[in-house]
Length: 176
Length: 364
Image 1 (cartoon, helix red, strand yellow):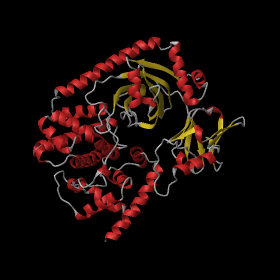
Image 2 (cartoon, each protein chain N blue to C red):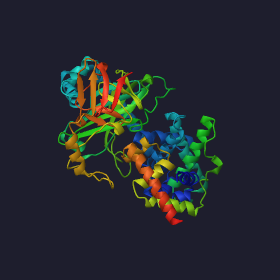
Image 3 (cartoon, chains in turn green, blue):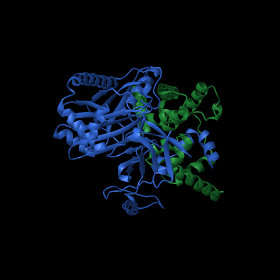
Image 4 (cartoon, rainbow over the protein chains, first blue to last red):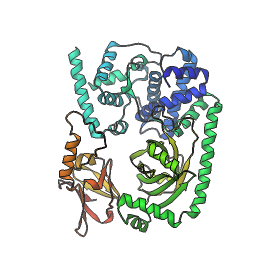
């Protein structure tokens, strides 16, 4: 089901709509929660965190109207990161290296050209390297978790990431 | 470069995120059971009443589970039937070599659990556990032509091993994460002609807090596109309850410059095994293989295997001076090194030699 279809379903039948959204993006949110909260949260806390993310998304959609949204995935990923960083702070009693206030809001529609360029360069690396960059630096997965996700061996993951970083650096220098 | 990436991903906006394509995907899916659990939590918090559709799915799932558990209770009275034991032993011998089942039985490791419904049979062939991990081998087979054909033609099946906690307030580390979340290693074999699947699964666990496991198999196809188990189809759950407590005490070994490892009769926990054990694999003709640039081709792989297949990967030196050599065909490597078609008498191993002997582990 596409994001557009999901948004229509959320509007007409919230229960079924949420069920479909969780089917489509539940694993994404759990990945972010596991990576951010590993070591300080148990399985139940992580499940609670995942469900809280979907509740926040649902409430936000209700507030602004699901029909006014363009896509679901980017919003859910942003909500998940904000929520998990906040939870990390509460649970650990320590400040995260990322300031919550510095994170973009769900409704932030700005587009930084340097960011856009870097995202395009990552895409240009091609798979599996482009995917490994996202898994490591956006989702925060360990080499072992990335190995499970991609089917590569953990040491291959590490080697490919190192190679991909060098390539990215060279591509950026070329562009400058 | 890493700094630039961290800066990007820390401040990425929804608009920028939408520029990412398929490369930002996560492939592992939640299982239907996990989806149901998250949905139920979310709906309760969001104050949404379930639709008829959702309620129906939930009731159906519960009913079939209850039936399965009741059936398992009846089965426990008849589990000692000679026919069942014979099937079970055959499976165990396939994993660990001829006569292994009898040997394991002497050590009190055998598990004897079978469940059937009209179409399928689920057998827990063997389960063993240390304080840190549990390994379960189970067989799923069709009992009639239609079920066998379905098994033969379906590539993915939904299964789940659920731990029952002794103390709910102390959940087990890394375990109970759902069907695949807590899985450390999974090896699946399928006999298409006979309509049989065999599964060999290792889970990370804190066994000191687990009372027993339930293994359930929902024989419904998993749709790769929707991530839904047989959308719209009837659930037909088959469940086996089995108890497992730590029944293996692994032995610790150490080597200068390397992390410690533990050995039991069936495997070694050795997270750096890929890096240090010289291991060669044969890639059969029918297996698709696409090496990256600069990596060996299938032909080069197989030539290397032929040249080195008899080289020692691991040599176990026993207290009486005797040696047991395992070659590439006798081990499977992941975070654990699993022994294939052979067991090791771990209690009497004095030293473990890796490859040509540059690395040696001695008993702690």
